[in-house]
Image 1 (spheres, rainbow, N blue to C red):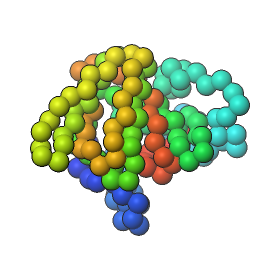
Image 2 (spheres, rainbow, N blue to C red; image 1 turned 180 degrees about the vertical axis):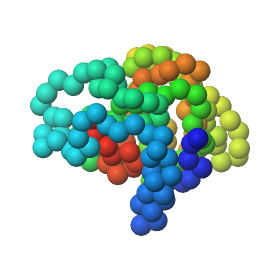
Image 3 (cartoon, one colour; image 1 turned 90 degrees about the horizontal axis):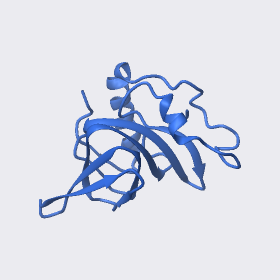
Length: 156
């Protein structure tokens, strides 16, 4: 089961909404295999094996942070199936496909829907405020780039 649709924002309510979602769905999420605290070097000045990090993930739809740059986090995730329609009212979101094929459905303000299809080695930036729904017919391995604090700040 997936969280109900929400719009994430920077208000104080965001923390409460995310906490409620996490508490509701934590029983279906696997714990990170390493500490969830940010390492002192934040993943900088070293080689990071992205596919190796993804191999440590126990389930789908559970992004884990592997590095930070300034106020941005690099997150690896495995996905399969469809996620909910959602938007980020205060930030863009970047999807980089490492393995597999990803479709991202986009819905504009008029309600028109179009899709972006991505293969391994391709990426897309979803603009701030754009409703989107990632979909994967088979397992897809991704690198997400988002500002720190968007959601899922657990480290692997």
